[in-house]
Length: 128
Image (cartoon, rainbow, N blue to C red; front, side, top):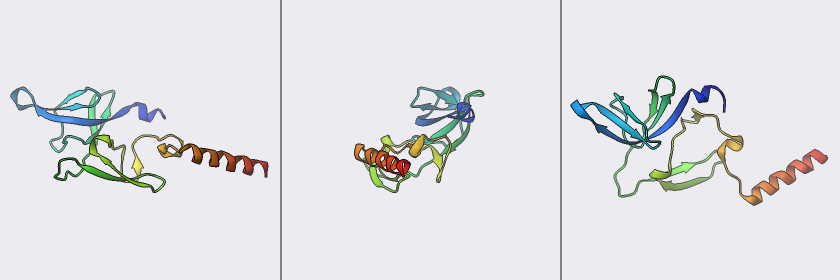
């Protein structure tokens, strides 16, 4: 991770509530409580938290659809599509641009067979 990514943290909003005297606050999944937030921030949104000032610098909302379990259809960096529940999703950027640096392979875990094929191709390429 670069130095710039150590200045902020992405947090998923667990709930939005009102405290004493109607002051809004949010609870995040990493047990933070943040007061005086943007009124557009809702549960399951992702916020970008400045670690020095402890203030929200940006946030990403998601659309909510009615239903007992919200199923999200996701496409990863390699083009594979799959569906999962909303609780398993954590937004890390807007559009195709991430807010944080991703590990090699853009965070996609290869299967054992795919890793073996990749190693074999690298060995054949190095030998040639």
